[in-house]
Length: 95
Image (cartoon, rainbow, N blue to C red; front, side, top):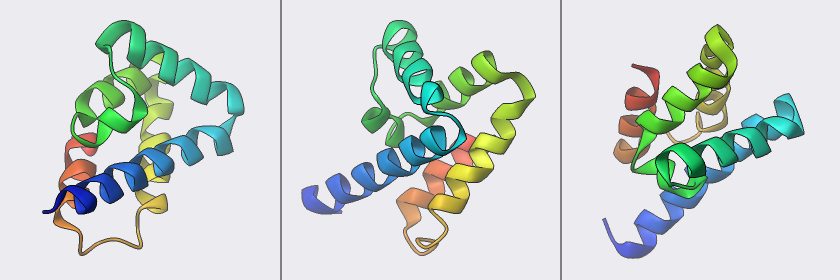
């Protein structure tokens, strides 16, 4: 995977997460990004490589509703099933 390929997939995942959060409620975006920064010292763009903190943040902030959010992220990335790295991200996020 080239650097440009990595950056493209990282940005794509970051946008899918952001879109999901904003579509649900624009305050969700601010809550999640703040929590990720304060607890894990990461941004949304880091979630591509580190999906577990995102999953744990969604669980902690929204309880069982986190599953709906993860499904929405998957839906936003459903056009890329042949990208192995994105599939790995989604698998780790879903565990």
